[in-house]
Image 1 (cartoon, protein in one colour):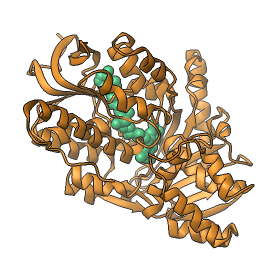
Image 2 (image 1 turned 180 degrees about the vertical axis):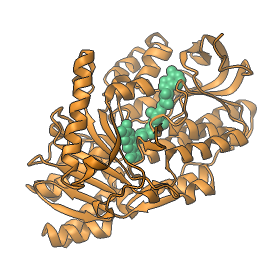
Image 3 (image 1 turned 45 degrees about the vertical axis):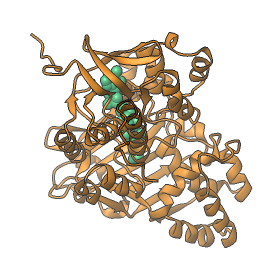
Image 4 (image 1 turned 60 degrees about the vertical axis):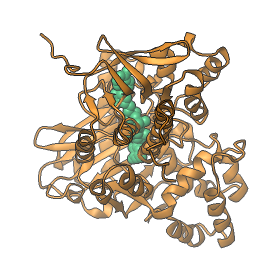
Length: 483
Ligand SMILES: Cc1cc2nc3c(=O)[nH]c(=O)nc-3n(C[C@H](O)[C@H](O)[C@H](O)COP(=O)(O)OP(=O)(O)OC[C@H]3O[C@@H](n4cnc5c(N)ncnc54)[C@H](O)[C@@H]3O)c2cc1C
């Protein structure tokens, strides 16, 4: 008989959370700490969503999305998780760029970018200061008409090299493009520029293990291999979910699943206003990714001069369509040295590339396998420029595609970074449509990435806490999100 992953579950909770991405986990922990009964349901056999890892023979552990996040994670993890998690966050100091326009190494913060823009790119100092101040000053309530491309044109007209330096890493970080609203760029770029790029020492498996322990301590009922098929509503109010065929009641439901699948698949368009449905239909998904995972033989070392993150490209200019093109010219390499996992003797490299789902979805099985092999081969060939003897050092290599991301996270078209900007308004408007129904997860570019997802989880937990306590007449127990 197959195992019942819901054995011992209650029939009713204050909150059911669908999905264990960083937003779902953070919302669950925050609400349980505030005293609410919380059931977290994850379809995969592992918690973390995109913040995940996998193990291969010879003890190799690959991280999927642990490449870098802004310093704000320390504050958010200290406030909403634990000191131990916050204190494991360390800086990556060597960020490299190599493309036909320039090659450089940077700590990726405002001071160093100012130096580079003035000394290497010969931009007047006052222009650089004005740009940084404008980007830093942007917030959600600003005019959203200006695009990122227009922002660059205003400060650095005709400077394709400067635009490449400023934009390429952010495109990798959240899939945003020159056509997206400037505020989505300004907020994310400024977050990174405040202090640089950070990572979690010990790997994603250690982070998620620590988070799981904290959630269990706070009383979250955690269930893996539990796929929600339906969110139930009655007369404009959420009543519960069906998971693995069983119905469970809830006063509030937070979906960490993709925004569009939450609305159209889990709830159903008929439960919403016509105008809301039309608005939700126009929300664009963000792009997906491919990755190549390379593990060196135990004890084989890569020289640390390769850097921690390397944005490399052979494309003569920076263009979004080139970044997404099946004929890859641009890759981001993450180099994981033994220090990444203290006590380990392993060096690993993960190459990530933004990709279109449509380039992979309709291939026959042999074509798909051949395409993956080609991806692996061309990635190793490109890596040889930086690690000439890498081929003889490799112990294990494999690749993932947009279909892999779709399979493991259920995200429509394997979207790596949720939705484009317009998704944020739709996500926030859900509880106005159906009382007790919320969405927390990558949307709107701003709320994606590790930091965006954690903070969005807290914002939504705050809303749910208010709703639950309003009905019982108590004061809210969740403190407001860190900025
Ligand atoms: C290749 C790649 C590299 C990245 N690199 C970085 C990086 O370096 N830095 C950074 O900050 N961000 C990075 N990101 C983005 C970051 O990982 C994500 O934005 C963030 O982890 C998303 O969190 P989330 O809460 O939105 O949910 P997700 O991580 O998207 O998780 C959603 C969860 O919901 C579950 N689910 C969906 N439907 C159901 C259902 N019906 N029932 C039950 N469970 C369900 C899924 O299985 C999944 O676990 C990267 C992403 C990718 C793909």
